[in-house]
Length: 285
Image 1 (cartoon, helix red, strand yellow):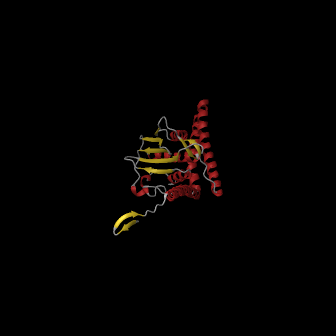
Image 2 (tube, helix red, strand yellow; image 1 turned 120 degrees about the vertical axis):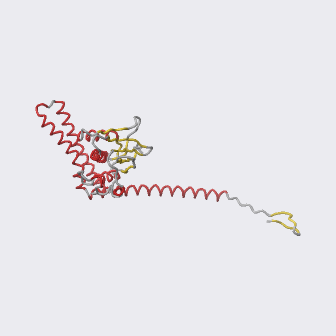
Image 3 (tube, helix red, strand yellow; image 1 turned 90 degrees about the vertical axis):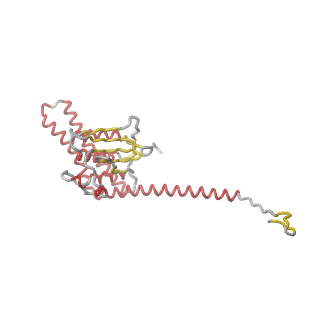
């Protein structure tokens, strides 16, 4: 405040206030507010993911009969095919062939057992509000097992797998359910692929996710069908003349979501491609 003498400034009165404490308090408050907002956003994301898993499980259990009839068909067909070949071969079957066919049938039945056990566990967890069973699992091992079964079911199919040599394929998932998603995607790719065309399965990922792209050279999904593609009992325009129930993709997406993953239709220039996404296993926390 200036001091005046007949209009002439002769001095000033200065009031000084140390605002450092107030500034520091404001900084602390802003940091605390930012931290709380981050925690709220993170918790909201976790709750949204849990709700999506819960809804997917509920949708699947409401269609439990359809899931069982659909998912049992492939392993039962594999076991039946192996046993029929043994019967046809009769006394001409060598010991090695018998062991190989029997192992194929047993592996298919073991897959059924894993599916039933995992589904029953999931039902019990849903009742008690316990989180989904997710463990470290090598997705490349699951993929190779599924590819071998699909190849046995359709010897004429040209199924090619592709993965980087240095890829860490450890996913955080329910192995039995992840296996069923891969079974559905690969069997669909075989079913709708033109005869003699290649079916590619590409395993890759980023820092937080593993991606499995299953692609064939069949007809593209019509734009009009995309919105309902994952609905139960929906069959698109390209399914005309092909046997099916319309529940495979519905089941696959529900199982993917129950594990914290996703299933997406990819945009490609030719053919049809689906991407199965699972979170990477990041080690024990």
